[in-house]
Amino acid sequence: MTMTLDEQVDLLMSGAEYGDPDTREVMRRELRERLGEAHAAGRPLRVYCGYDPRKPDLHLGHTITMRKLRQFQELGHDVTFLIGTFTSLIGDPSDIDKARSQLTPEEVRENARTYAQQAFKILDPELTTVRYNDEWLETLDFADIIRLASNFTVQQFLQRENFANRIDAHQPIYLHEFFYALMQAYDAVAQEADVQVGGQDQLFNILVAGRKLQQGLGQRPMVAIIMGESLPGTDGVIKMSKSQGNHIPLLSEPWDMFGKVMSIPDHAMPIYHKLVLGWPPARLAAWQAELEAGALHPNAAKLGLAHAIVTIYHSPEAAEAARQRWDEVFRSRDGDGMPSDMPTEVLAAPERLIDLLRRLGMVESGKEAARLLEQGGVRLDGEVVAERDHVVVLARLPVVVQVGKRRFVRLIADKR
RNA sequence: GGGUCGGUGUCCCGAGUGGCAAAGGGGGCUGACUGUAAAUCAGCUGCGUAACGCGCUUCGCAGGUUCGAGUCCUGCCCGGCCCA
Image 1 (cartoon, rainbow, N blue to C red):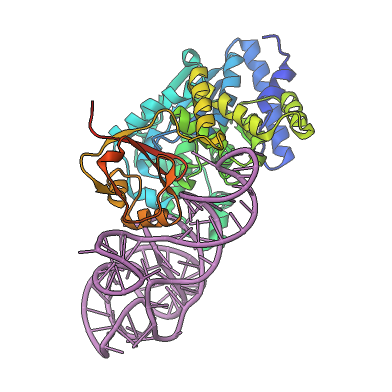
Image 2 (image 1 turned 45 degrees about the vertical axis):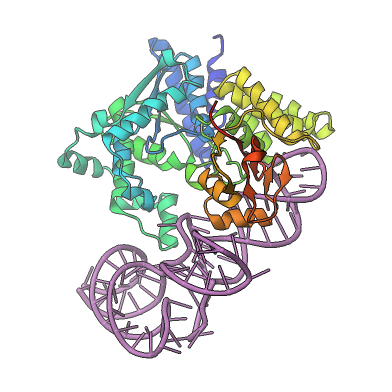
């Protein structure tokens, strides 16, 4: 670790974005000061990033902040992976549907438990402290909260883009949403944080609420590292999020993960390399040049990306297997295009294909099955079945039922 | 509390004159094409059926008017805006 102070600052500030250059300069300067002081005092900085455990799984989009934490970790600082157990019990205010389904403490604990496991794909478990914010938030009483709230004006909160937009759009803003920011701000105070990492959606919570509250309570305001770019989802445009249905969970199975990565549009490949694989600019530029020169085929590039990502979250072996299966299923133009492994089900008596598909859960409804048959989306051993009344007889067994390109079931007469 | 505007196809956004299974997007699914599950083009996208016919269930909730209601009336619930 022979980086100079300025090199460290450059590294840690890379990817951070604040919407205006002045703020960036301030953060940069403060970070430099702190790093210098910490070094002189021989103590590491306290760095953290908070994650909301309401959703059962983290996805690739979350790894951007984790990689930033990792950088701090590698420079010897104390990293806390903070899990917002308390905040998530309240329910996300901006998401009205979800607000109704409040989680029990047990559910939150369960999610939280796997969260840390998932995070350790990026973070060093030895060097990471996992904490839960109910540790300090639960102890606050109403008087405490009023006192905390008195550090802010309503106008300060209304300036937040999120709220300002909703006022313009005539959408509701609930009072407790203000307290959400307040709670998150208190996280920083309780931990006496030196640095907090977050995404753009946390700009207000960290830069305004968190820093102001620390200052109001006599602490030195922390340095905010707000990651500028967010990862687009599988559609290639909209920020990855579970509610958009375009996310790639860290816990997804190798084959699923591989396929999801393959489904991103070509134009999203560079940002995936940058944000998910964490490629430095030089390497990224070289890769892009190769691509543009035609030396690297886009399909090969994407296969490489999918392989690399599955390798990180599973293993090289799993990535290799997924890739092979991909070739089997999609690359063989005239082959049968079937994966080597697929679920097996028993057919004990002749059954109408429509009923069969529904029974196996390969379609949602009989209507859908009928539609798929009409459109030529259903195959038996690779042959399109068009008659909607087709009956699968026992003499055909074993037979592979295929719906669309990716749903396969092998039908057999009976188990063993 | 008063006035006013609004809540639409259980993914989202959004048209809708009393005849509507309800326009149009997005998303999703299927097919063609290809370099992939990309792009492009086409079709489909409430459920059940002995099924191109019949039935059932949908427009915040509950009633009512009507041969017939998303559309009209009444009450309630939930939101925006203005006033207090």
